[in-house]
Length: 181
Figure 1: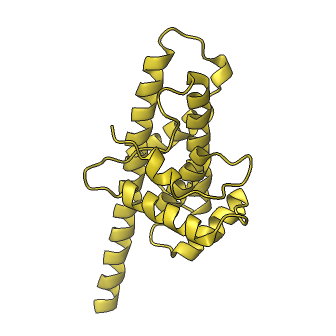
Figure 2: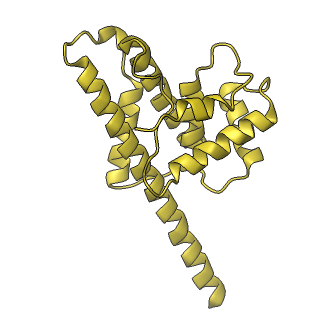
């Protein structure tokens, strides 16, 4: 597994207090999936509405968004949610995982994304992950479960992303057919 934490973290100079990198990344990814093809300015405005990032440098937000877009579209499916390293306490990782998923859901909904079929089930799984409560986990298998949930999250996000992008391509194809008639 590649470590994107440092790549993305290098882009963050001025994160507002109380805003986790996981929440920021999840929200950016949700926006990218829910509203593909917007301008960087539109993403920045949406992020500011959702997370109040007005104190962050525009260049910082724009570069972070660009990196997230590249990562989520990676042809080798190497996408990784921005979560704490595996040596962080499990409770911190679970909290960040729930924040990431919650940010994704809010970003996706802000982008007015729509999914259907298996992608809708995947989106519902992301919603369920956002409801995780680290205080309620005290199972011996929690570490293994965490890895499994992170892997499931990655697959669910990529499924949602691919479905929305194929729906966008289908509507573009229909528009071009309508114009040629």
